[in-house]
Image 1 (tube, rainbow, N blue to C red):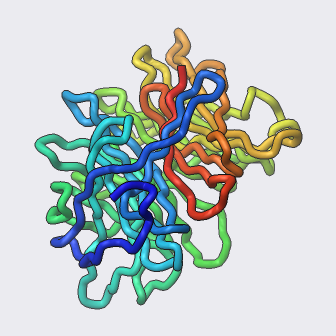
Image 2: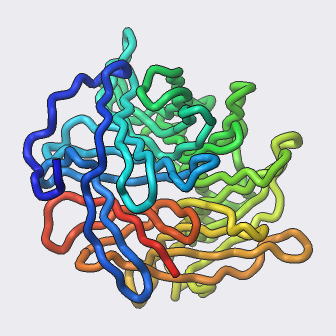
Length: 355
């Protein structure tokens, strides 16, 4: 099936034991400002259906990647969790991964947000699912096993949580967000130790709300976490180190787009993190400015000689002929996210390779 033929999807059984596996057939895009853009869509997408890409991780000992996301049908039917396996050029395979229903929990939607390669064709991936019984309030999920969905599914529910989304996993830990009340309340961030089945809150002094969208393993017990924190009425991106032995955060550092202050930059949020290979980090960001509305792209933060985080540099992107572009994750100077074509219809996933 090619991208020009967006007819009815093939019939599928939404169970962990009967998930589809398909060749990617979507391409397109172009280049602008030295950035190479490529559309990466689920090949069974219908007209006005949407492919939403959320996370990426390299596959060990190869140039391939795992990309997580989900498919939203045009009629706002059940979301289908997706894992793309292959090269960033888009010639790989798509796997459907849908959380299985159990007695008392009838799953309606599955959204995957962050994969990690665990070797021998197996992955660890996180996200969320909805059930008929829980309505619109998501339950966090963790899946470990092969790409056919036959592995172990586990709900993630930090103590006191009523709505949870797990965003990223690496090195045996998961980060995400939860609310303790189904009415609008400040978001709380959590870290989950998979092996010990233990939750830790990530708390920043003075922040009224905090998100945890990305985690990177630095080796040993050292991890770096990113997201956004609202403090003094302003949402800023942040980086923080976290030790898996002491469970202590350190080096809290806030970032605002183009290193500007409020009100020039209204908000900044980091969506994903990867190593730059030299001790620093590349981060996908979304930002809103007073002059230019929405900005998205790649931020680079080096390590300082004292071990802290240095000054960020910023590069913006915008998918050609789109009305909206989001930057959701990053790997090797490559941003992955979602755009809305100017021609209308559903949203599409994309890969943007920066020079």
